[in-house]
Length: 151
Image (cartoon, rainbow, N blue to C red; front, side, top):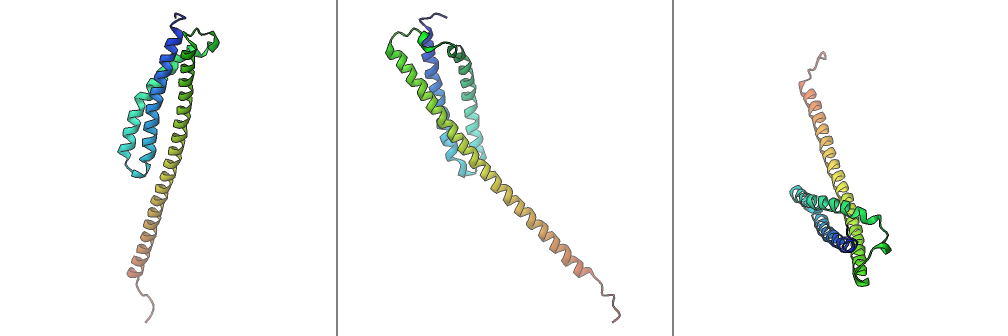
């Protein structure tokens, strides 16, 4: 790879990474806002929109891997401003990534609580059905019994 193009290519890759992370952040925020809606279709739609972004982000990470092996001071930048700009974008990527992780963790926790509440409701329904069945069976036994005493 041409040493003069290397920093430019790195800047382009990091800029694209920020674009993808920003799009994922918007989706994570929307997903978090949809939790109370109880609409599985909406959540599945958001997951479907995330998938190609995540795939592109993984591809981008593999393209960035060779740059991680080179010390920043070994790169020949056209200017200090270009280097600083790239560094700021990389920091924005890190911040955006942390925010996505925070939102996803929070969303996962809320989904787990929602799932547990639904499971408890289902269990309550099963318990009520069992109790009702037991009372019905007892009442049927009372109605079907014969008085076998000598009266």
